Image (tube, rainbow, N blue to C red; front, side, top):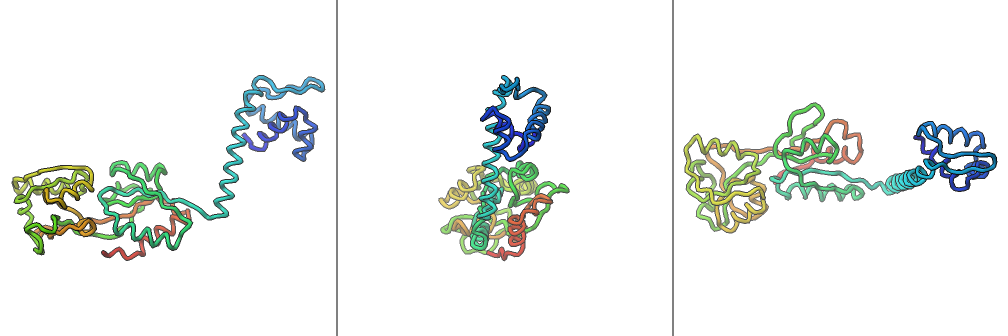
Length: 292
């Protein structure tokens, strides 16, 4: 359907007079009649019946009048919103962030990006890891910050932002405080808090099983904030990213016999960077100094 024809029909419906409507629209009456006929052809039914000097809406025309008034109102709103956005330059970037990533470094970058681009709103979405790829590809979010690569598909572009060590974390007053490193097998000596969303969890559990370590698991949670609070309150130790441990005020040691590191990535579908705001975000994220 042509929006111009819809508006021609609405003009005729207001006055039920083709001559008057043509004058209001500043077109010829034959052109108006032709446009209405084409609209009727689109619908496959008659909208307006002309009987001599009498012009009136058919039953179908009366029903479609209400529908097409809503279409016109929506179009007017869209035109006004597009004009407003073009004038203000306001735009939004929808970002999915994996729950295991601590806010610290990310929000610092957000703050600096906002200072340079105050017209851009950053909208953060809490998306579970299995759904991040789906949300990227169906347009629910524009980009994602993830702590493990999403599935390598042709449409996705992946940029590594930074790496961080996975460490054994505990409260400041713990007896391990001040030690630089610890052998991995020693985690079995302490009550352990299991992070169910940890991207290293399967690998950790495999190593624990291979080494036949008798773990004392005192708690499990999908919630990172709950695990962190339980560690801080002395309930047990946990394996956390170094940046997270620092951010929430925990002490930690590295593993002397195991190199556990993770990368944090920016993922964006190919072609999405035709948007200037997204292009600026990706460029600045790649150039940013992500050091702690």
